[in-house]
Length: 363
Image (tube, rainbow, N blue to C red):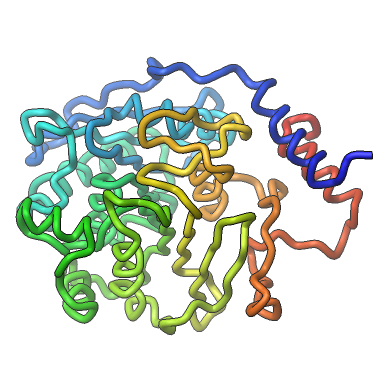
C-alpha cells in the first residue's frame, strides 16, 4: 500500500497532466494604451479572466531582466491562476530603449521617485485599470522577480497607500543603489546603506503614515546573482515599519525549504521570508500544480511562489491547503496561524479531500 505522502504527490502530479499545457507565449495578454503621460516610457499589458464579477482584485506583475511580460506570465503561470480564480493582472513591460537588457531601472533615483519615471508610469497604469475594469481598489497587489522584484519594492515604498501586499522574488531593498556600479555591488552583497538608512529612505519615499502593505519575500540559498543577504536587508528595511522584532514569530519547514513569519501586535502576519534550499536565481515553481513551466529563471523546485503568494493574499480559496508544511522543532509551540498546514479536525478524510480538490478531482 502506498504511503499517504506518495499518494498526495501523485494526485498533485495528476492535476498537472489533466490541465492543458501552457503556451510559451501568451496571446491572451492585451496591450494597455493611453494610460497617462507615461514618464518612464514603459509598455503595459492586462489579463482579464473569462468569468469576472464586480470588484476584482488586481495583481501587478513585474518581469526580470531579459524577460518580457508575456514570457514571464507563461513561465510563472499567473494568468492561468487568474483565469481559475477570477482576478485581474497588469504586466508593465520595460522597453529596450530604456534599458538594453530589459531591466526595470530600480537603481536610477529618477525612476524610483514618487510621481517620476518608471514608478509613476506603473502608477498611471494601475489608475487606468482600476477605473475601467471594475477593480476593487482595496485589493491591489504587486510582485516581481529580480529587477522586477526591486521595482516592486520601489512601488511599495513610493505608493504604499495603493497596495495591500507585495511579493519580492530575488529582489533588493528600496533605494539601496543609485548607480549601475552600486547596483552590481548590492546584488553581490557588497556595501550599501545601513538598515537604519534603508528604513529612513523607505519612510521618506512617500510620507505615508500607514497602514503599510504586507511583504512576502522569496530567496534561493544558491542565488549568486542576487545573493541572499538582500532578502535579509529587505526584512531589516521593513521590520520597524511594521513594528516587529528582529527574530521571526514562527518558523515553518516546507520539505527542504523554510518559511519565516513576522507577526505584528494584532497577530497579523506582516512579513514572510521563504528560503528555497539549493535554488539559484529565478522564480520558484511547482510545475505539478499546473501553474507555470520551467525555463530560464523559471525553476521547478517543488513549491510554487505564484500559488503561495496568491494564497497569502486571499486570492486562492482557503480549502487549498499548503502540503507538507511542518513547524521547525524549535518553534513547534508557535505554528498556529492563517497559513499553517493544520492537522487536527477532519483527520485522514479531510487530508484526502483537500488533496483531491488540489488535484482538481473534487469540488
